[in-house]
Image 1 (tube, helix red, strand yellow):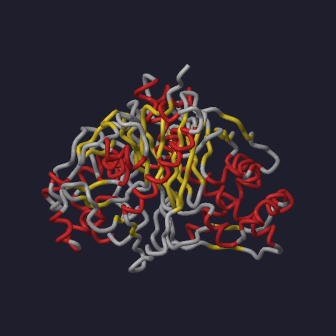
Image 2: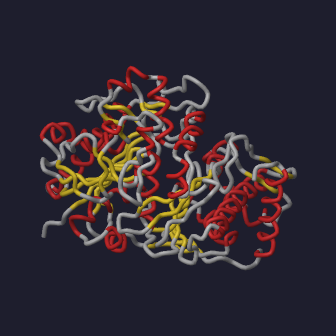
Length: 487
């Protein structure tokens, strides 16, 4: 019996990955390719640009290799029926009328548009009060403003302002000038009244005709055309489905489906997102709410702390051995806020915040354990802020990201938060994109697709042994940040 296959393409910061899943969420085939970033060195501090053509070359290569591997399995490539794409949130690029990129894309981590974000916050104050967040330099709208002023000739020539997944879906056969409800949050789309706010053109000078048409993530918006089929070996007519940001895709792959459930994605940084029936607003602008395709809200935020601190301090081949010694290094007297770069976004916003270590580690094992603990304490603090702002936090926590490779860290995070942590068998953004691809073909909703395509294969129950210790340390960490003027 023929089994339909659904393809998810994830184009991130470091490379591209593609998976083909069946309707149960099993990964039948996959391929990945790292970007060659040697020519992508920042021109100025705080700048981060990438060539969109590099994304398409890598995506094309991954798709061709995926199809080739399926061909070897009795022609299973013919079972591919749909495809969706996720990519980085807040990244923006310009396209001409033929869909060709004009210059490089400004990445999500590009912070050059500080002045523009302040202007956008002033101009859009009424809209922002309605939506409950504030623009930050990493958002797409301030980047549009920067391009309009500093690369005026390119901006004038551009027919479309696009997000990475919009561009890649257009390369595969979709109409130009179409985006999804997930990517547009940081471009300031009004997710309540379903339209672009007037202040964008009236007060900021961004022409409305350059802004994309918005459809719900998970909606069929095109088909693979002959040119894309020749470039990727995908079957002509494969359905193309509106995508999402990588954070939203990771959320879907985690297994969270009920109000009060949260996904904590821990990789280079920490991204947390939950499900709420009501819009959650934060006057300080730390939190923002994506729209869930099934009609609820996804309050969430991103911290700048994460696994990057381990990459800076330890060699990758040491981590497994260091994991084995964590239990001997807790409790300890060290207090760590594990920021590697300058600036924090959540649970407080301070562009000048820096990481710190209070106390002197007696060994690499102690240093390692205290940094794992520090990230978990920030995660705990984040959950406290979400609850203070009125977000429901009573459900399950679903973990994803590179850190799920460490059972030791997962157990420690469960202990610090005093919450059960669940891990799905394929918790990754590419699988989330495959879930989006499957939803309009095989299921009645995104949530039904998640329930059928995500399986939990590990769970970690909190241990009460050190509950008082983690409570006291959490209070000390927050007090230390207050004394530094961070919050």
